Image (cartoon, rainbow, N blue to C red; front, side, top):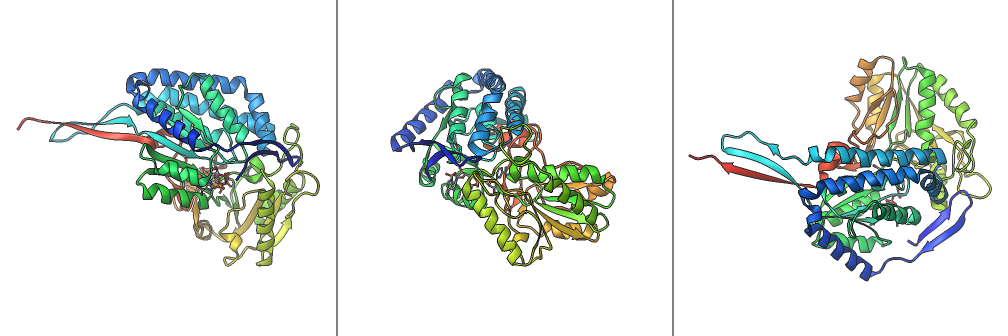
Length: 459
Ligand code: NAP
């Protein structure tokens, strides 16, 4: 796929990039490996690495407006949401800068055999394959922990956000990172496969669709490389009969429409207790109809464009198919006429279990409504999914919500909020949403080499 910036609000081709060739890949691998084998990756150099992370955070915040504007023009993110994304990125860099020394400390293991401990060492070169929906945040989740650990990272970003990829790389360089620590590559899936196969590469982190995840996981498995997969989701947003309805409706709409609905952990399946279903449905319908669609750079816009024409076409086809298979369209369902890749806020209901829509991820502003008679049926609907990323439960009865949370099979559950993300909280899914984690201590340790050392006690 060509690396090209197209403004999704206008359809205008902004810039086309030349793909990188074999020479660039060879040079990147050699530089990254040389860096890994140098003092840079050693524990003594941890303070210098952490300083670079802090400087990087400062640069991000200094250039927040420019970076948010770049995301708006390259993938259509609302400008205010872009600013939030940059702040979150700076937060991740600062979090790991503050915590890495603690995470890398050796851990003692009591044993009768003698003195034993596990040391934490860098693993080696990491290949990162990342999506466009959070063009900076997704990169930061991989870069910050690995830079602190001492693992050089090579990036293959989504081909529709090449300017963001180049900008992220440039900022890291400006923060003082050495050559080889982070390299952006405009490469094809075949070239990614070659890099994974290279013996100098020790791990691969992919965030993206099930399709890409499955291909890359096979390549990692074939070459016995550690991999983490952050894939799609079909998150539930459960509203119980005792929920604060005003809050649930507001948060629910936000959770579905943030980033034009293109969030892996967006609320996609709204499971409503039958006693409040009509009220929630009406509230969501009114809110969706009142949404202001438009230019993502306009502060008053509430819903920007989808990231590409392909995304709009795919979503439209999915909605059409869902209706053909028996679902009812409560509102929306069509691309917005005119320039750009906008899609109407849409609500589907009466989705039967044999409708493909039940199991598919709709990556755009399309909400699905399900109605359940009690908590058992809520759990049954929630768990009848191929995905298991996040989810939310709204109820005034926290104990009831906690019991439900422990029965819903996903990697993350939020009570009285939507599935959000914060540097200190582990992020990851189960089932076809992938495996492994990012963020927090668990995410940090994914690409750490754990080394047991034992001093055998005298007989
Ligand atoms: P995608 O098509 O899978 O693309 C993701 C990345 O993988 C892009 O860089 C893409 O490159 C690359 N890629 C695609 N096929 C590949 C292959 N065979 N080998 C190597 N690389 C390959 O996904 P997307 O449509 O951009 O992103 C949306 C999906 O990501 C959704 O399913 C969403 O839920 C998921 N997501 C998950 C998380 C999470 O943390 N769990 C976060 C964000 C998004 P090209 O752009 O060149 O095709």
